[in-house]
Amino acid sequence: MPETVTPLPDALEEIARDFADLPPPERLQLLLEFSEGLPDLPEAYASHPDRFEQVHECQSPLFLAVDVDDQPADDPGARRVHLFFQAPQEAPTTRGFAGILQEGLDGLTVEEVLAVPDDAPYRFSLGEAVSPLRLRGMVGMLSRIKRQTVLKSQA
Amino acid sequence: MPSTPSSPTTSSTEQDRFAQYAHPERLVSTEWLAGQLEDGRVGVAGGIALLESDEDVLLYDTGHIPGALKLDWHQDLNDQVTRDYVDGEQFAHVMSKRGIERDTTIVVYGDKNNWWAAYALWVISLFGHEDVRLLDGGRAKWVAEGRPMTREVPEPEHTAYPVVDRDDSRIRAFKDDVLAHLGGPLVDVRSPGEFSGELLHMPDYPQEGAMRGGHIPGAKSVPWGRAANEDGTFKSREELEAIYEQEQGLDPRHPTIAYCRIGERSSHTWFVLSQLLGFDDVRNYDGSWTEWGNSVRVPVER
Image (cartoon, rainbow over all chains, first blue to last red; front, side, top):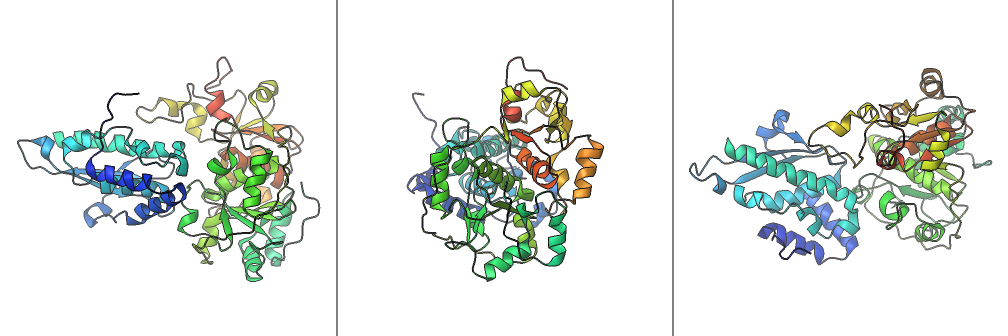
């Protein structure tokens, strides 16, 4: 057992608590709500598939893009991160994972996003409801978000 | 295999279409199912049990065919501790909860060209349930035809499905069976990249945890999706024979083993070979590449 557990950002932590408070069958319903709440792409992205990276760990096609503000110029770690996802309606689990990360991470600073622990996907009490195998898709999303955040904040 | 299926009241064209296959009673059309629904025969005691089995565990919850119940391959059909399928007792529980009896007609459908539905059908067949059928074209065809969907989850009265021993001897192959079968016909139904082994070497793209890439020596590469039409229905018998028999040289009289990564895609091919083309002896190696590609000193071909 690790002596300390890296905390989740507040918004993600709140989502994790919401899931944990529900009995397992209702966790699926909450995941469905995240799936349905995943925002549509803004026009600037919808017409630019080249700005998206495919997450191959997901069983269904999921594309994500990360945008980092260019201000403050002197403090890249304090710049805000914005997330965009695209996944088909026929892939609600994948959309649900994306919805959780969108709500939990969008608008955080570069520093905050990079500090999110890599095991975060396992903290939503979803292993029993969707199987640990399927959670790998969310692990893949998170690692790509972090990598793109690094790249985009150095640009 | 069922010998006396009740004859589906389909239109003559669809009946003709299925009649070409070795076991036409294994398929129902969307039209037939719609008729059964209208007649109130779906999801009622003594009627047809309709099961949706998807890759995506939430897809059923977004809407499903009226009367359908969810059957999740991972949670309902796999043992949660040992890498194996549920045992007779667990299976009886899964069936009883869904109001299914031993002589119930089960119709399975799902996403991705019935990929997971075929897997469910194969597992159900391990328990010798006689009358289990696939909805040709699956969920996508039903939706494309604008047929009814609902979010209402039925609550069937529980039944007492008997505890039946799983029979792994006829349609399931284990690693040792495959080793003993080397030199005989094998079908690898994974993508060409998985077959050649190159997918394991792409940086940054963790594949499903195999230590070695490649395929079992002598296996023919026939990606599973080749058996399906654009709309998810199965190709005609003639087209399937052209692929599996003429092109790949497989022989319906020879015992044949199909495999993929964990045995789901190869269930689809198992269905095609055994139920549509009438191969005498087809087994699905469910250990597949996640077992073979991690095993010490088994032969690998690249």
